Image 1 (tube, helix red, strand yellow):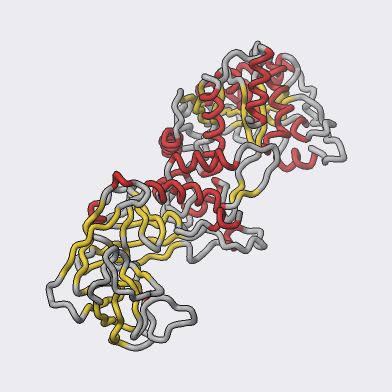
Image 2 (tube, helix red, strand yellow):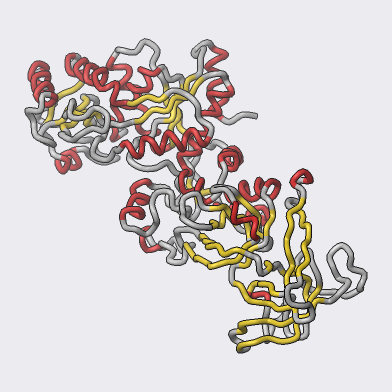
Amino acid sequence: MGNFIEEIIDADLASGKETEITTRFPPEPNGYLHIGHAKAICLNVAMAKKYGGKCNLRFDDTNPVKEEDEYVQSIIADARWLGWEGDIYFASDYFEVMYDAAVALIRKGKAYIDDITPEDMRKMRGTLTEPGIESKHRNRPVEESLKLFEDMRAGKVADGALVLRAKIDMASPNINMRDPIIYRVLKAHHHRQGDKWCVYPMYDFAHPIEDAVEGISHSICTLEFEDHRPLYDWVLAECGMFPHPPHQYEFARLNLQRTIMSKRYLKKLVDDGFVDGWDDPRMPTIAGLRRRGYTPSSIREFCERIGVAKANSEVEVGQLESCIREELNASAPRAMAVLEPLELVLDNVPDGWSETLALETNPFDPQAGTRPVTLTKRLYIEQSDFAVVPPPKYKRLTVGGTVRLKSAYIVRCTGYEGTAENPTRVHAELIAGTRSGEDNSGIKVKGVIHWVGENAVSAVVRLYDYLLIEDDSQPDFADRLNADSLVQKDALVEPFLAKAEPGASYQFLRQGYFCRDSKAAGLVFNRIVGLKDAYNNKK
């Protein structure tokens, strides 16, 4: 069974209302796309593909103060990475059409020039229970409004001195219909149009015209635009320039736990230096998720799983993590990495001794084969895998105790150097005849620990946490920023990882899934997600 958007499209095709399906994704180029935009992209692309139509990528570049070509290029790259293919359009290419539409409204007596200030407009707009107050210029003569509008375009009017307002109904129960501003003066350089224009349309006026010009059949928006739909319809009806006007449909936006979903706040994190750019792997931007190690298919799967709803709700971030974890569990090569190295010496083997093991690359992919891993006299294990005074139920290495080295031999600890609180070297004996797959010793061990040999290579491992702490009682997101959202470790990893391609992902045994950073200098691995699937385990 399809979602409610599909039901609408099915009905429109069956009735003959629509014969071709065209959707669009219309971002404003004032920041990088984030995971919330991914849902909109995936939905619009999916609808176009299902019905043999197309999905336009259109930049709603009607506010030159906040828009930059950097954002345009990043949005194109992110949309293509997610699987969008199609034509690229810019709202600014329709400025002449929009201007003509505004002139048509003035001529019909449906728009007028006003000198109202933002403060006065707020005061005169009214409330949900009280009607608004009409401007003294509401009935300004048509010719006078036309002349003033021409002056605005010609640059003869200062920023904010005059606006063009739609003449609708100051007593409407929908406040958006109370003579909204549809054009303002803004003398700013546009990233595409340069200094050609100094009047710019407001979003609610530009959006329906953009859709109509492109022949959009189903304009799919998030729920915050539901109250704007009457104005969308009014603009298209009153302009009278579009014989087959589109219609707007709303779906619930994506709200993700412990995730900032506002471009304004994300930009502040970048500008204030809390993160290292828009593609910082902690960021919920598409660029950040890509650099962290998420794949397009995992994000598309996530959008498919959460579905399309009519009511807003908050989605557990574990759902997103579960999608990439399931994909990488099946596809990622395995490797061993020690994040906090502690030296372990096998005292009962000679200096220079080594043994090469053929370890399985991926248990779910027989075609992946094996990789050579060398066991040596000197090894490195995790500091947390050894304790002089072990806590209750401790199943790893302690003095006199035994553990199995992953895919290798059982070892028995004979002592340590340093202090009980800070051991610097562990001594152990390799128990002969206990090699994995060949062990007939009958020795039972409670724990298995991972390790690397003395030929391991150094790497930086970055452990990421959410940008926001769990406490949501603070209204200001700045008070919820997680100071421990990035922890960096100087690790040792298997030698073959030195040749890992940027962006390549691996499962570090007992640690999680990691991706070689595509931007950092040197050998740097970002943790994508841990091994434990908290979301699916709760279900």
